Length: 305
Image 1 (tube, rainbow, N blue to C red):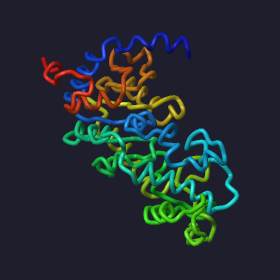
Image 2: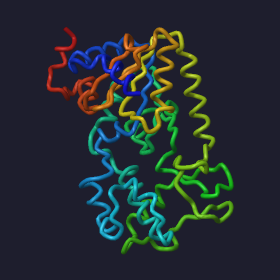
Image 3: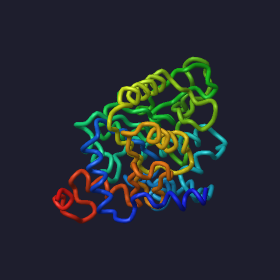
């Protein structure tokens, strides 16, 4: 991999200004745009799972359990469901039902709203939908913070949780929710759990399956067209969902262009560098610049000359 990475780093990273110009031209000339959103995209929108934001909402859990961040705390085997859901209701509320601190997703929507687009994402925070993206054009591969499933699971049903999560968040005391708010499966009585892909019990519900089929149809429809595959904030934790498929599609279809924006992790295989735009830059700056907000500090007209 190190040998490959050294050769891949020759992709277009030399000049961020020039790279943004190329990215804008690729988007403007594309018949369709596919956005692949990873964890780095939501981080750029201000959804940090550690630091001051973690301290603000989970200070009592940090003191008691010495958690380092929200993510690792989510796997802790709490002694009671009341405490489990006190933690998880905070986790879900601030990452699913509070607005993103920065307007990155809205700026992305401004870029593609008048184009034929589709989104595939490993993020579970519903940010694309909340920014205005058409839910029929989103494949949320890893689940959604706003959904529950049976922990067994006894069936393939998915349940919306906003009303219950808000009640848990507001009514908890001393790191516990009231027992009457603990959710149980209406089918079998087992405890509910989050509809997130953490193991093989993840329920790929009807909505998930339909979204996957729509994504496949979109790619099939545009396989002979000029398509921009725009990867944003995807690392190497789950590269088989977005990154590797984007590389393969670019290699397979000669009119596809691969673009990657990721601070400290923008690169492409040597075989497709001629049709790749790799920006080692802050996604928030690039999105602002492309949407006309001038995130990199340059006049928009500079790129159109």
